[in-house]
Image (cartoon, rainbow, N blue to C red; front, side, top):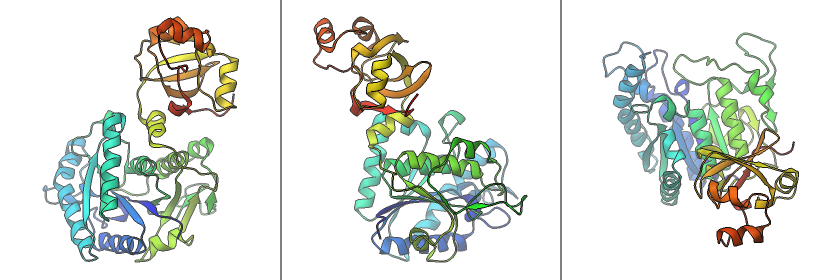
Length: 371
């Protein structure tokens, strides 16, 4: 099997009973199916929802809470119960499991971003399955991923996974909501996920316990593809479901093609997680060099500097009001102001630096392929 590393995302709808509580039977079925993948030598990272579902009964709620405080309290109780259920289930197959709880700021901080990669890599080296969830008990709006779909996409890119499997309660992506439009067409294969397809897709989830609808699945798949990871969105039953999905026999939609290539971890951080500190406005020659020739940004191509930023900060590169790239600068804003429009030799002489580039191509990510 060509796939060596897989991220599996299991949503609340695939883990719960009709009353919204955690289904141990469903969890054990997922665990057995993951164990079969690992027995074939495939590394698996599991992104699992279900903490709120696991905890609300013990907290005294008769049904799943709807308030933020109620959900966070239920998650605080349920996260331990959820990971305990997984640990017990995986032990039956001789598999050790681990837990990582993440918030959005872990990805924004470059050192923490690297640390998450190191921890996951070490766990995989030791044949331990990382079980990851958003830290719902403490996360606030600006520090959330929105839902575990996007978290799974970002993790799949971080670890350079070969496949992201988004397990849900609908068998793939449709041209319209199949519950409302019986003639809706299912997409069996998509080479890419367009913005138009996302715009026409409803965010509403068919599940009462999940936070993400089909739009969130599309956004996650689009993000995964941009990071070089193929994706599958659909359903699965039985202990062979994940093996079947990777063999191309899954009941859902496969997304990606042979053009899908992994993106280096450093460039992922620049493109998706870094905070933008300013902008550099560039000329025609610089635009051509960046978009067509894959070159670095030199002082000669900079027309204007916006905002104040330090060396190694991330800035946007703008051409005719379009952001065409993001990159990590070698100089601060004051220095670039002094050397903009000059040759590299003149620039290095003026500010006594040895780096000829304002942004080296290794620290630059294109956000627009052509304008």
